[in-house]
Image 1 (cartoon, rainbow, N blue to C red):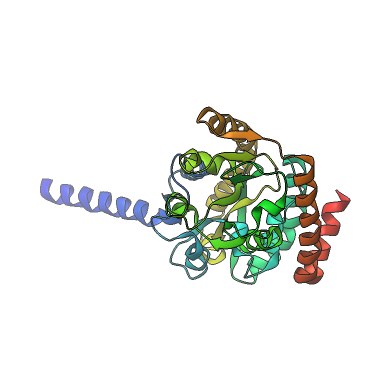
Image 2 (tube, rainbow, N blue to C red):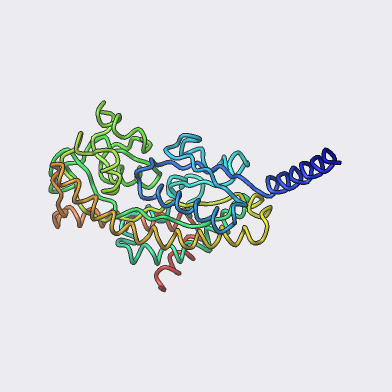
Length: 325
C-alpha cells in the first residue's frame, strides 16, 4: 500500500508539472543593438515585466547584438515564425514600404515633441501596413536627434562633395546624394571597421550611436543638427500573439505601454549624456553654422515632398494627421 500511495503521489505530481510546463510559452526575440544600449536595456526590462505580469506563463528570450538574426533579417524572421517577436530600426525597411521610413525624413519632425506627434500620426497607418504581413506593433523606442559626423569642420555642403557617407536606410542614402556625397550602406555593427578601413568617412546618426561605436577613434567633429529622431519598433507575429491566453496578452500590452513611456523619457537623458561623452573624448561638438543649416533644411524640405509622392495616399494622410496635431 505504501508503494501504491507513493506511486499515486508521484504520478499526480508529474501530471501537475506537465500541466505547468505546457502552460508556459517561450518566445525568441532578436534585437540589433548591444546590451549597453539603452534601447536594448529597455527591451530586457520589457521581457522581465512580461514574465512577472504573466505569472511566468510567457518568457521572452532576448538575443541582443544581432546574435540570432542580423537586423535586415529580423522582420522576415518574425513574419515567418522563426522568431515570435523582434526589434528593428523602422526606417531601415523603407525600401519595403515608405510608411516605415517617415521618421527618417530629415527635418520633417525635428525635436522630441514633434517626434512624438509624428508617431501618433504614423501608428494607425503602420498598423494597417503590418497587418497585411501578419504582424502587429507593440511599442517604439526613439533615438536622440541625429547629428552630422565628419572628419573636419565644414561651413557648407560643398565640402561634402565626393565624401563616402555611411547610409543605413533609403532616406540616409538619398540625403547623401543630395549633399553631394557618395552613399555607402554600412550596418550598425560594422561602423567602426568601415571607418577604420576608409570605406566611409562621414555619417548622420545619433550621439548615442557615436558613443556605442566610439566615434572619437575615427572622427573629429559632431554637429548637433537634430535632423530627425528615428524609431526602433518592437513588433510581434500576430498568430503567436493570438495564441496566448487573454491574461497573457494583457500582460504583453501593459508591459509594452510601460516600455514605450520609459524609453522615450530615457532617450532625452541618454541623448544629452552621449553628447557630453563625445566632447569628453576629444570630439568637437558644435551647432552647425547658419549657411550649413539652411542648406540641410532645404534638402529636408525636398525629401519631404519626395516622400509624400512615393508614399501616396497613406503618406499624404499621415503628414496631414501630423500637421493637424
